[in-house]
Every structure is written in structure tokens, then in C-alpha cells.
Picture 1: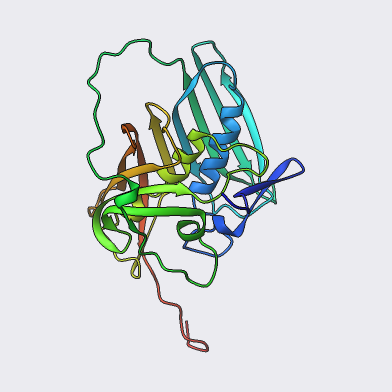
Picture 2: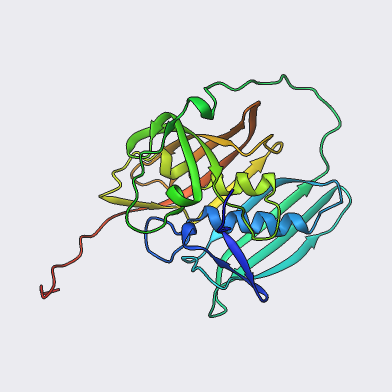
Length: 269
């Protein structure tokens, strides 16, 4: 991997590189970037305990700026077999922009379920992303390498894609397997949209990942589906995989809205 990292330390906070930007507005981070940072910081709190990440829930309260983002971490339930932690990222004005809760558990000692293999081709057989450069850095292009084996970003309907971070999450730190899962897990709605990208926004205010085990290498795959029905809350569901098979699942609720064209200069409003 080459510089830049997604985030660099800045005193008590962290500043994001422009490669973390999402598609909706310049300077507003893609949800996968703060999710990866929080996974990294929360996992550091249980390092050496033998506990593993079982669930990570992120609530994206407001657009996340590049920073500096100040973390506040609280131990909700300490324990040798179960530990629960809360974290909040504060923006430059001290306002909370993302909250997260992580649940860490002791791994099972038993093997009572059949092992499932990978039900689709690996990343080497995937097709490069159909997301084209737009004249500024973007997380789906510059932060992630994405290879599709089913569907595409701009092809409506379910899709399956492999994701690999192009950079370390935090400069000076080794990227953790859970960081890779968190960064990829927020792409479920993007790759499986049933709506037009040019006519709708479908922003997820949350992300929940259940992790059964860590991925074996840098690649994480999502098999994703979006559901949008009138009168219901829209959502996206993704099953997570690595080269050996299933590793967990992720869910997102979605705020769906039409894109309102900008008024011509000088036009009455």
C-alpha cells in the first residue's frame, strides 16, 4: 500500500485524507472511512484480551468532515468474556458526527455447523469498478479497489463485489482485519441500488455489522440487496465473505429522497 493513509493523527484527533470523501458532497466522508477508524480505535481497547469483535453499530449523525475528528470512548460493560464499548467522533465544532457501539465476545470453542465455501468467484476473476473518476478524490475510486463478480454500481439490482483498501487506515498503525470489514461494509447500498443515482439519494444514517470471524487477507466481499417500498423504511442487506466463505453480515437503513435540480442562476425561487 502507498501513502496517504486514510487518517493521520492531529493532536488528540484524526484528520482524513481527501480519498475518504463520499459521492454526495466534497469534504464529507464516505461512511466506510469513519467506520474503519472507529473499528480500529475500539479494537485497540481490547487488544491482548482474546476477545473478538462480534458487532459494530455506527450511527452517522451528520456529514463527517475531514476533521480533526476527536474520539471519545467509554467502557459500557467490561468483562473477560463480554465487553461493550461506546465511541463518539466529535467534529471541529465539538458536535457529535458519528456514534458507535462495539460488542466484543470470547470466541466459541465448539464447531457444530457445516463449513460453507465461497459461492462465487474470487477477486482475481472480478471486473473493475464502473465508477469513473469525477475530478476529485473519492473513497469508491481512490480509497478502495473494487472488483465486481455480479452486478455493478450503476446497474440496478443486487450485486456482489470484492473490496480491498488502497491505503492503511491510520498512518503509523497496522490496519486490522476488522478495519477492512468496516470500510467495506458500508458499500452495500451503493452497489445494490434499485434507484437511479442521477435522480435519487439513498443515504444510510446507520450501519450494523455482525462479524462471525475475521477475513483471512486484504479482500472482503459483499453480496448485497436493497429493498425500497412506498410506505416502508428502505434498507440494504449484505452477506460478508472472504476467500474461504461467509464471515458475517451487514445491514443499513436508508433515507431515500429525490435529487432536486439546482435552480439556474438568477432564476426566481
